Length: 119
Image (cartoon, rainbow, N blue to C red):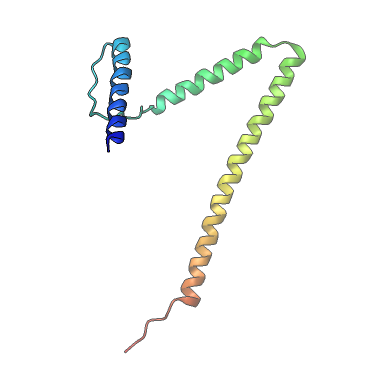
């Protein structure tokens, strides 16, 4: 019985130690009963991150010269078309599954569902 108590006590001690280090670094107080909430990233932030990434990719391609620039453009184009093809195939598969489910439901209704009896 004392082993779980010791583990719990050790865990609390380590938690205080870690939180103490974080508090010293950030200067904030911590409520030990408060759970950590996941950080929410706004859509605008992800769009800005995509623009920044695309801008850095374009800058990198522009910094290349001659054959390496052509090769980089070809590779980027192939990767882009591969990703686009994957997305189209995924959408096509989802539509096909939806149509098959609809046909299966209609066939079930027509052939297997018991007809209502009239009295």
